Structures are given as C-alpha cells and as structure tokens.
Image 1 (tube, one colour):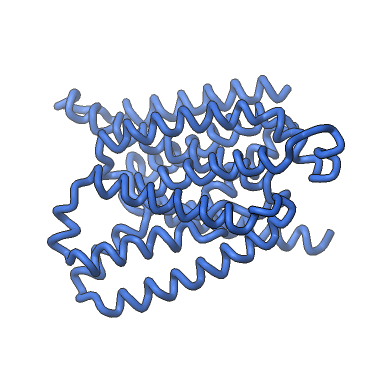
Image 2: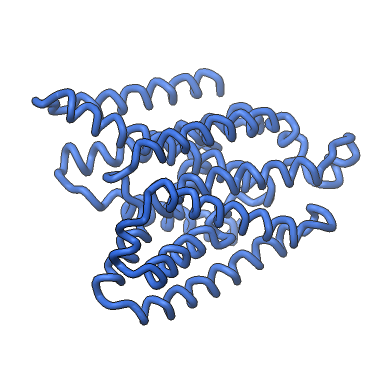
Length: 314
C-alpha cells in the first residue's frame, strides 16, 4: 500500500511539473522554457531537501512537532545576510560573486550546525532535548543581534537585507543550482543508506542499543545530513521554516509506515509538490509573484498549532 502511494506521489509531482512548464507557454518558447526549468528545478530541490531533512530531524529528536529551523538555522541565515550588508555596504553586497556568497553561507551554516551538534552531544546522543533548547536560545540571540545590526543600516541596505531574508525562487543562479542538486543527490543517498538504521533508532536509545545498533554514530550521521540539506537549500533560496513540518506531517499521514526507506522519499516528493503546485497556482493562475512562502509559512504555522493543541488534549 505505501509503495503504491509513493508511486502516486511521484506521478503527482510529474503532473504538476508538466503543468508548471507547459501552462500558457508562448514565444519565445526556448527562452521561457529555460527560465521555467530553472525555477522548477529550484522548487523541487528545495522542497525535497527540506522534506527529507525534517523527517530525519524528527526521528533524531523523537518528536514530530519539530523542524530543523527550531535550532536556529533561519536566524543564523538572517544574521549572515545582515552582517554581509553591514560590512560590505549595499554596493559591495550587490557585487559579491554569487558562487562565493553561496559557498560562504553554506559553509557557515554547516560548520555552525556541526559545532552545535558536536559540542552538545559529544558525550552521547541521549540529550537531544538540550540540543533543541540550546538551538532555540541561540536563535533568539541571533535574531536579536541581527535586529540590532539592522538598526545601523540605511533604508536601502535594510531593504536588501529584508529581501534576502525571505525565500525567493525567481533569481536562482544555475551554477548554484547545479551544486545544490549534486549535494541533494549525495545527501539523499546517504539518508537512504541510513534508513534501516533509523528504523531501529526510532525505537528509542535503550531498545536500539539492546539490538546492537551504534546509536550515537547513527544520530550524528543523520544530523550531519540534516545540516547539509538545510544549509544548501537555505543558501540557495532563503529560509522556509514550516515547509518541512507540512511535508513530514503529510508523509506520515499518506504513508502510514515506520519505514524510513519510504518516509524519506515520500517527504521529499511532498515537499516538492507543495512548492511546485503552490508556485503554479500563485504565478500562473493568480498572476502573483511573492506570496508562496508567506502562504506556506501561514499553513505550516496553523498545522504546528493544531498538532500542539491535539497533543496537549491527548
């Protein structure tokens, strides 16, 4: 049953992708197709990366309410953008090579995440709650520092920071896209290789250790994949906090299975479907350009509140 539903999800993604590319296609067809294919690829890559990362993180944290953004990834990204504009100025930031900026942001995000994971879990992976709480506190601190630095910017520089702090799929560089696609492919392969081990790890530390699983190694490996996926997707288009919660929750609902070999690709497909179909509706049907991420965040926030309230009543 779950395998059939996974195939249906793949067909659904293929269908909405075809609609996104071919709907109201006019001359010059070659130029328009190239633009749409780049945007489609960025939507699929980011959706798949965030969906996969969220399922991994929820398994590590043993909590389906959490997303990788809870440990401060989005706050760190905004802080990086603010400091770059504050240091380089509007002109310097605008002339910064796109690959250099992409590489710098990815490197800082990955190093910061691995440093946080390593520092807090160096004595073992049984203190995930401390990791999450520390990430929340660091996120609040970084948002405060970014807000303080933004007060030092002039209006034009502040506008640049605001624009860079929200996810946008309209100006993705093709070289960045190729790097992100390669990283996503390698990360998904690594995640699928961990799938059976994660099935055991999801039973809990004590049970997993009694079954002979090297629990700490599996948790560290999963967190490394999470850091890489989130860093690359965020450096590519910007932060989307609640997309992962939507994708992971729908994956668990549509694919009622504990097998990560199905949940991981399911969440990846659903994340891509959400972004592609949402962008198709707002861009092709409604003629809007910048409302997709706002709607995704709004729906994700409502889902988060629903899950919290439902759990508090049970």
